[in-house]
Amino acid sequence: MRFCDLNESQLLALAITAEEEDGRIYRDFAQELRKNFPATAELFDRMADEESGHRHRLIELYQKKFGEHIPLVRRQDVKGFMVPRTSWLVRTLRPEKAREQAALMEVDARRFYEAAAEKSKDAAVRQLLGDLAHEEGRHEAVAEQINDAQAAAGEVGIEQNVARRQFVLHIVQPGLAGLMDGSVSTLAPLFAAAFATSSTADALKVGLAASVGAGISMGFAEALSDDGKLSGRGTPWLRGLVCGLMTALGGLGHTLPFLIHDFRLAMSIAMVVVVVELSIISLIRWKYMDTPFLSASFQVIVGGLLVFLAGWLIGAG
Image (cartoon, rainbow, N blue to C red; front, side, top):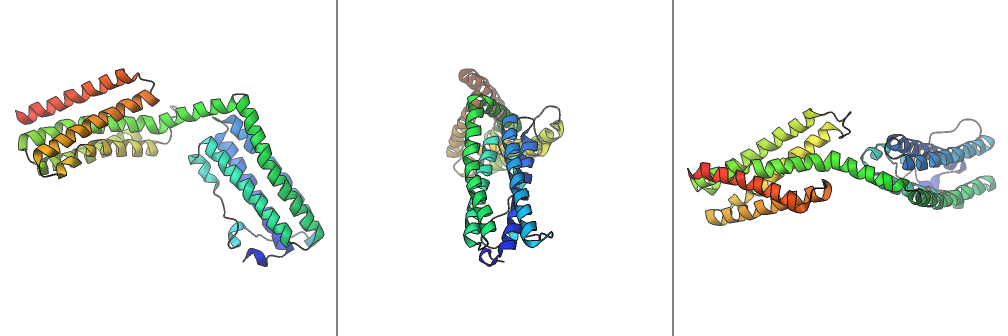
């Protein structure tokens, strides 16, 4: 059905369902974030309580006007208006993104009530919808005030630090392990094949096999090493996927230059890529792992150089 075709009873029924859905989403947000982000969870608890109050007022007016039975009219039943939201997104959202999602929900709710109030011809229905539109607008300001108060108390800063630590544990750490393994461990077989055969085609095949094989191996090893329940390192399949992809990417970086048929040119570009890869690893260790940049660079470059020399000696021997 179209929004313009809804009558007063359907408008109220839609509003009741929407308030119930929004309240549940806020409760889901609060439940999932409560352990690590209590300040944000408190904000969502307050917003859920407000939605519950709106729903009770809407139900009371509906029963007074149209009887006890309330038909199920959902957002997805109305064309071209309110888009359903999925509460499972909170599992992949950082706290600040969850707050942004809640702000968008409040804006959508206000616009809905404003449009519904203009359409309604019943004075009591029109007044309640107009009041709710005003309150939804006020919620946006209240949410900002709560955010400001929590930020002033240092709660938001604490949450940001927790979120950063989780990002490091869930994404950066397995990704860095994979990138280091892919960038360093594939050097020896790749350059050994290159120096032994002086063939870019052979080097390319060896590099591709080493990169893909290392990616699969590292991905499974990371995923099976820890279920994340005690360590807090997140879901194993995500860590394994990140680690495997970064491992393969690290090896492919200095393998793809051997698509060039000119051996010397391909070798020169591959060496430059290796330097870039090792520099990126050093930067990541410096930025996220609190390792001094010079120390990180020295450790990574020395390790990469030793592996490269091993490949060169084996291939040229």
